[in-house]
Amino acid sequence: MRICMIGSGYVGLVTGACLAEMGNDVVCVDENADKISMLNRGEIPIYEPGLKEIVNRNASEGRLRFTTDLEEAVGKSLLCFICVGTPQDKDGSADLSAVLEVARRLGDIMDGYRIVVDKSTVPVGTGEMVRATIRKRLEERGLGHVEFDVVSNPEFLKEGNAVQDFMRPDRVVIGTDNVRTAEILKELYSPFVRTTNNPILVMDIRSAELTKYASNCFLAAKVTFMNELAILCDRLGANIDLVREGMGTDERIGPRFLLAGPGFGGSCFPKDVQALIATARSNNHTLEICEATWRANQRQKRYVADKVISCFAGEDLSKVTAAVWGLTFKPKTDDVRESPAIDIINYLLEHGITVKAYDPQGMPNARALFGDRITYAQDAYTALAQADCLIIITEWNQFKSPDIQRMKSLMKRPIVVDARNILQPNEMRAEGFAYHGIGRL
Ligand SMILES: NC(=O)c1ccc[n+]([C@@H]2O[C@H](COP(=O)([O-])OP(=O)(O)OC[C@H]3O[C@@H](n4cnc5c(N)ncnc54)[C@H](O)[C@@H]3O)[C@@H](O)[C@H]2O)c1
Image (cartoon, rainbow, N blue to C red; front, top):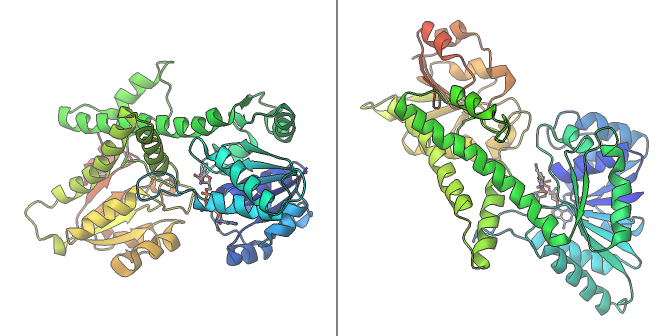
């Protein structure tokens, strides 16, 4: 099939490359000319395992192209995917300006049947707005007779595992009111579920739009429940790891998404929780669990920062240097959007603590945020030199089995706040470290 992806970020680029991998003819469009130039040079603007190989292979075999020219891309495509950002607006709701701008441009360009597939995460009712926006422009151009369909096809990939997730989705959700369009989308996705037999779920557009928010908010609540419980474990002298095992072996609960940590972040969970809260409020409803999830998550980041500060009770904090391992919101990505590291570091800086950070992939994006308010180390051990404590915020594999003696020899004081519970408390204490996990003895 001939396809264009409008927006070539984390979702658009991965989707475009994976659809090309199955033999489709894909053009990725972006308004960011630098991004497109990079892609045309064979460089990948983001860090995502396996993406470079699949992009370059499909580009060199002629199935994947990159352009800033929307008109040319739409001209040849049956399917036009919208993959632009939907960031949080001032009132918490999703900012749809990029999505609706794309819809207007499509209405300016289209001259025959197209299927417009919304893959951006958008609130219920956006499909209808996209349809009305395109229709209005077509009518203004005297092309009111041109037919088109709008489909909601939310994306569930996880950064850090995006290619794998797209190639073997747990399910594909297709929201449409047109049976023929549903069949075309099913055909497009059938190679991705052939070996797993995972379902392609066809539903109405509104339910599809809501499914994405429901999934992200449920996961955010699940992880937040464990984070809250971890604080209680600290108070009670219980161990969250053991509690997790005891809970997670119950089939009704399941073992995943139960790891306590510094709070959720990323480009999706925070804005999606806020957006669903806003949707509910504007429909005269309160989602109590989502509202509590948001508050508890804010508290969690503060809890980690306070744990650090309490290690230096009574001291002049302006003389304290904290090493930070991990700036991205999760491992295997360069994405620092809404990372808990941001709030934690800002809180420490407000208290006068000096921060020296290291992250395997997130440093350029972190530098754009923090500038010279923190310093950036070349590697994990350099960050520890003369540090009064270490805070582990992201669970990169390389932080999981460090050389403890080397750590101790580099640090001014052997104090570790392990906000991901990745080190062994007994081992650390045996080496003379003051070790503080989250909800662990
Ligand atoms: N990142 C994820 O893990 C993830 C997962 C599932 C769903 N989503 C959703 O997918 C959407 C995109 O997220 P993302 O992380 O890929 O965002 P992103 O910021 O990485 O990419 C968006 C891209 O769209 C481009 N763009 C904006 N306006 C444009 C226009 N008018 N024409 C052409 N290009 C334009 C931007 O330059 C940018 O490259 C969001 O709604 C997000 O919530 C993201």
